[in-house]
Length: 164
Ligand code: PNS
Image 1 (cartoon, helix red, strand yellow):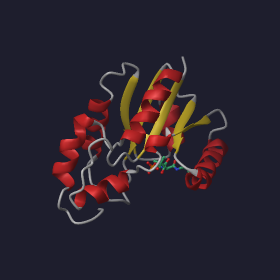
Image 2 (spheres, rainbow, N blue to C red):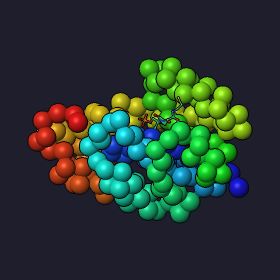
Image 3 (tube, rainbow, N blue to C red):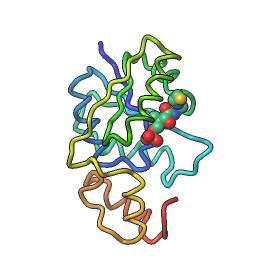
């Protein structure tokens, strides 16, 4: 059984993330979307909120599960018996950091491979930060995040005056 984890902050999950989730769920038997709980950062959404939004948005994908971790990605991947770590690449600007992360992960866990999917071009400009910025200044985020969570994201972030 081919199992992959897709780690990230997902604060909040965007249409770009969903593109990667949908496509990688067709490649692997099981995909675990792994939400990082980073104690050094203050996210806009709690881990539970982020996980629930991903669950809602991927409800039609039976082989997708949602988990959370707070340490190294490779440790969580091993815990999940995963063979691969999925990451999305939006543009060349993502390349250096993704290459460094993949190299570090390979050094720590040689049995795991990083599988990079190129984000579909229509989503290549979207990030959680851009969504939060737009939202906080009253911009319309419909289409940038899954429809089923757009209202929740908007309600939480609208008028908060900047990225948190
Ligand atoms: O959505 P993001 O913020 O780009 O995701 C980054 C993430 C969570 C994949 C990365 O920060 C991560 O793996 N953090 C856990 C610690 C770790 O394993 N770092 C990689 C080795 S340097």
